[in-house]
Length: 110
Image (tube, rainbow, N blue to C red):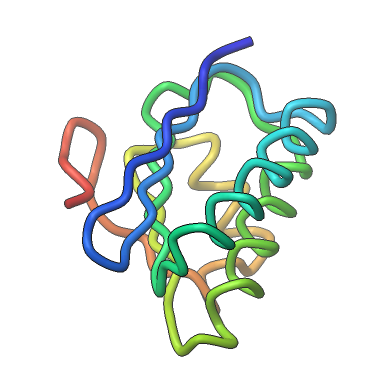
């Protein structure tokens, strides 16, 4: 289990995910994300997957839930720094129709 880090820059909420994104962890992160969004009123969410070691379909749900939060504000969700396996999961699920992939491994989100 890793430690998710949240950072606010302007109207952007940056989330650095760590460890495993399974149902249990994603439930915790979703609650934290809702709290952070209520406080900072971010327009966009940037998710960094560089430290994610495992992700199942719950991770896709996390990203789509974030999208629903910001879409109503006219914002976007950006994801980056993921492994080929995680990128493939997003690609096969069709997430890239709504979410923008940015940066390659080792790059910076912002």
